Amino acid sequence: MRLSYGGRFAGLLLVVLLVSTGCQRGLSGLPMIVGLDDVRAAVGDPEVVLIDARFELQYQLGHIPGAVHFSLSEASDDFIARHDLHNRMAIVYCGSPECDAAGVAAALLRSRGCRRVLVFPGGWQEWAEHHAARGH
Image (cartoon, rainbow, N blue to C red; front, top):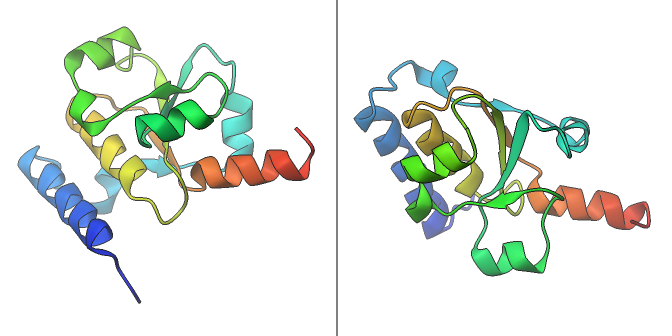
């Protein structure tokens, strides 16, 4: 199995985040995974915040409708409060299943008290492929 330097670094960062924030429950402490149908159902739902964890430029070039951009450097209490993430469900995605940003962002949000955080591992790639195939 080939891992890029970025993949190893993000994985290490995730472990450091989980341990340093007291999340020592193993896999049960990690966010649940959702599929494309769940994300499609969440679009427009006021109880759900779709969070795009890709680079700003990637977000600007296209994102799931209604998604807000999130960067790891922006993981502040202000971002959490602005989007009411203590009371709303969050679905975090990044570029593709090979991207680690969604998992890292979800772990960071959970470490700040956001308990309803889910990850869409197919990310923008799966969303865009599905909608291109359907002619949307």
